[in-house]
Length: 266
Image (cartoon, rainbow, N blue to C red; front, side):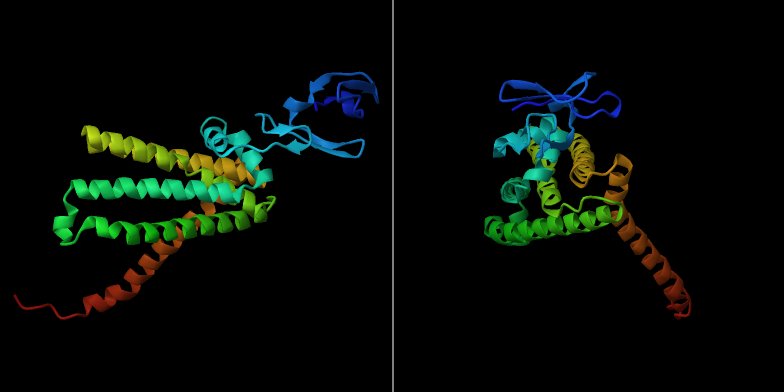
């Protein structure tokens, strides 16, 4: 199904094309391709909504496969996050988060074996794989859910849509840079290129992840770019400000007490 619209100077929809049949319902004017306009509204009582990128067909959200979502996050993040906002594939997002966590911890434990960490700890490193993976998975899932909940709440204060499930799914697939940087780091460690390049790759992956999160907030919560940036950074900046304030207060309170302590004899 494809739609055409003509909106000359606020005039109503002029033409439509449904099932190959054309009809006129208004004045002639500038013709816009509906599928490329991203317009949403109603026509003859039918709800219409579309976005570019091939995720939509008329007023229907087409089902997108798991691998397509990963590829879309890599190549077309804006359109992919728009799709995730409507489709809300939380289960697929959970599967992706599990895969990313499993791969990251597998690479981490392989590096521990490389540096003979087992000799330093006095235990078999492979015996720690299961408990550490479960602990890391629990922390990852809790951080993913908590971050989504906080950003979703702040976004609503900025006038956002309050689409928690959609944002949860988008933030899950936004972990893609973590997977890619882990693969690159594994190759760097295997080739013995150096830690400096690995640090640059990790920094690039972090920046990439932040950018994807901001795009996810903008598309899912339907905010402007500026408000999306503010909604995303308010929480971590607030935590940093609270920690700095706590340290300053602690030093101010404990400083005089330390000055009153007797100086030990030398």
